[in-house]
Image (cartoon, rainbow, N blue to C red; front, side):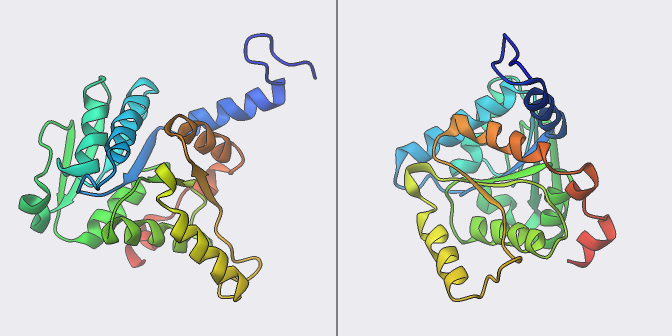
Length: 221
């Protein structure tokens, strides 16, 4: 088929791209509540927030105002976008919840926070962060590996931040702790502007029903 004159895509590819665009209405971002030592981390978080706002995609995140969490949320809000913050009550003072978001959900514990973040999101992006970020990311990777969902998961590999994790996963495959057929389809982007196109392309290839997890299953997990 000849390519579309405006986009350069074939009609089939364009249809898939538009399908992916339509599927992604909310993105959950996992990231640090600290700024880290590299100024590019904060810059990337703010830039991605701007992209989400301009693309009409709601941000779902951990509800804090500090570090990369605050940068991505404020990046969305400063450019007219929408944000859902979900924070457990005991972290209110430590992470200083961002009260200017359109929707702020305070949960009784971390389990409820993570369940709601999953249910309200069409895809997951991990910006640089610490143990909490890693734990949330790995949980989604585990659920995907076990076939509980097929929502896109992407590592925002800013200045190669996630390379040690990627190397560990390669080692796990080599030692057969990640066996053939039990892999995890992890997307990766070094540039902020590549994040959304890669998520949309991945979503276009996933049946709608595979993007979901039954609420009772999420509660059990």
